Length: 95
Image 1: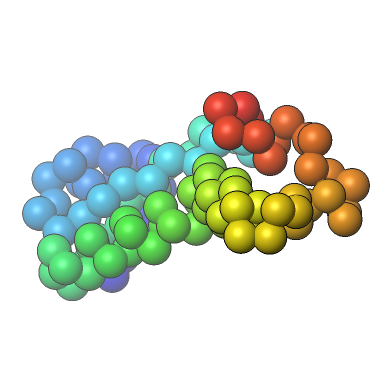
Image 2: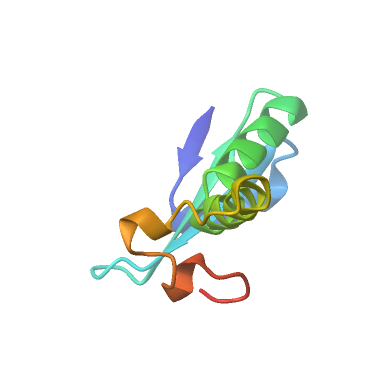
């Protein structure tokens, strides 16, 4: 596949097998946008799903889910031994 920077974002909208990705938080450039072209629609879906699963929010929610499951099974908070169980980032509904 090919990758284009934000100056080519119109190209991405015109391609049938493409998806775009925006990255925020860089000091030198507040928002970066990229367009990815795939060999086929299935490959695009695989990439989008892989990126979604790698996101911080997905991983945070997974950690919270498994933390709660372990608490149900053992009666103990698995994060307590690390001294981080009360941190807001490990609570559902906060960021």
